[in-house]
Length: 310
Ligand SMILES: CC(C)(COP(=O)(O)OP(=O)(O)OC[C@H]1O[C@@H](n2cnc3c(N)ncnc32)[C@H](O)[C@@H]1OP(=O)(O)O)[C@@H](O)C(=O)NCCC(=O)NCCS
Image (cartoon, rainbow, N blue to C red; front, side, top):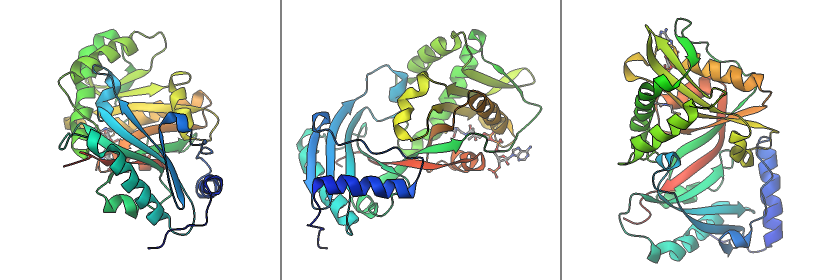
């Protein structure tokens, strides 16, 4: 297919920004593609920056990601966006090819796109990328199911450490087959260390749901300034982040998750935050419908090719 040869780089950025603004008012204005951030790529109708990232061993953050990430941030314009994106992806692949181990499943090519900016995504499908994860957004005050009123929601304490870790590990195990979350030999220790820190904070950020005196579910929230890292994903003025929700397998489907989500949303809304964001695995048959029933909708979609080379 013919590429869109007439468009200049600054016009690409302008058209890209205008398109996103029209598609979704909760998206931020795209920042300029800073050449210092990585390797600039350019094709007719498209511009991008490619950069490499390695997540530190032993950190809880690595649980939710591939260890080694080749990232591409793209700007597209014109009438042939799938062709432009395809040409950028091919250029990028040529760039990283020799540095990637064939069959390295802990290494991924990662493209994060606004969920509603769908015109070019066939280029990703055709190159073996999958839409594995979504950053979903909920506006403050959106109603959702109240859940089981018999489940007692209370702030988690240091005495809940083992139960909270077990619940956290159940979330990891359930989400792992969908391609982004990655259990490793150090996962339990990394999550335990994180929980020790979280359960020691003066203000509670982790709550458990109790049934018959047993912790059967957990929710972890981030408020500003902890959640400020997520501000770059939205134009909303202030953001909360729902970091983890999980219910033990035997208790799912009886309203515990809804009660925990309703509690977390009451915390976010009371803090005056206009939006809450969270990540969920798109193919997860439990979390995806759950979040959309609770007032969320997709904001960003993460496409992965993992491994980068077979
Ligand atoms: C996603 C998850 C947290 C939801 O928690 P949950 O306790 O199962 O959620 P709920 O019980 O409140 O709601 C789930 C379903 O049960 C239904 N339900 C709730 N209470 C019910 C009741 N008393 N009787 C019958 N059905 C009920 C809900 O309507 C909902 O049905 P739907 O799927 O048809 O819409 C849970 O399934 C889980 O831990 N999954 C594995 C880990 C995971 O995916 N975590 C999320 C990561 S983002």
